[in-house]
Amino acid sequence: MQSRLRVQGHPIQPMLVTFPLGLFVSATVFDLTDVVGGPAFLGEVGYWTGVAALVAAALTAVAGMVDLWDVPGDRTRRTAVAFNLVNAVMAGMFLLTCLVRSQSPQRGASAAILVTELVALAIGGVGVRLGARLMRQFDGPRVEAGGLEALGGSTGEIPRPWPSR
Image (cartoon, rainbow, N blue to C red):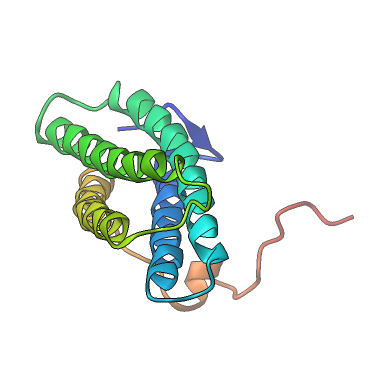
């Protein structure tokens, strides 16, 4: 299957998935530091990192829905739908924590918010596993080049991205 959204032959959605996941993890780390007694501003940094992650998750969801259009109606489609639903649940839980925190003036984290974020990250771990399964189903078995062959040539010469003058 070929993705409709591609950059130089590479599908966009697998690249985009790393941004919200990394930002959600970062937000949780900031909130953990705030809850265990770190500087108070880290709670607000965690809040805004969560907001940035939600924006990235929305863009990733759009790319995922476009890619879902072309997935064949078999086991791969079920995996892709489950992957998107799991990521939506994780993002929804973080949205809930951001909405709760937006009502407070300091936007700091609490123990309940931290637990909710940790559960959301555990759900996101299931999404990572489903995403890895999808990549295996789409790509199939492949042989990785090792040594100098991985650089693009058998001569050991590094190819230039543009012609030399």
